[in-house]
Amino acid sequence: MTPSPTSSSSTPPAGGAVEQARADLAKRLSIDAARVTVVSSEEVTWSDGSLGCPEPGMMYTQALVPGARIILEVDGTQYNYHSGANRAPFLCEHPK
Image 1 (cartoon, helix red, strand yellow):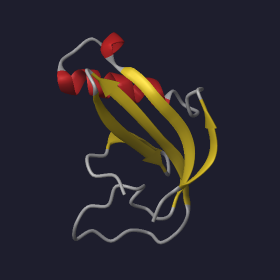
Image 2 (cartoon, helix red, strand yellow; image 1 turned 60 degrees about the horizontal axis):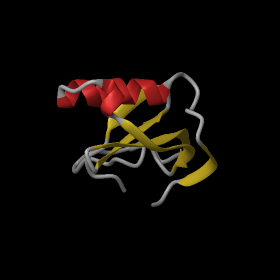
Image 3 (cartoon, helix red, strand yellow; image 1 turned 60 degrees about the vertical axis):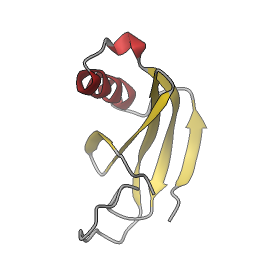
């Protein structure tokens, strides 16, 4: 199910989630965080506990979960970060 955006803006979600995601991606790619571009950042309500990033064989809470979707870019490649339920932003390789 597609999450429903609750608001769209160029400001990062609460808690510095964008900066956390940028730092994580820079570390993963062994690059300077300045090379990571923020494509978008929005607050969303995820349809379940998978936070839009379900893993095969896993069971998730079936409840609406407020969170954020952050899209970052490095050298033309986009990376999706999701957060919610007090979970720090994490790289979602197969967003749903």
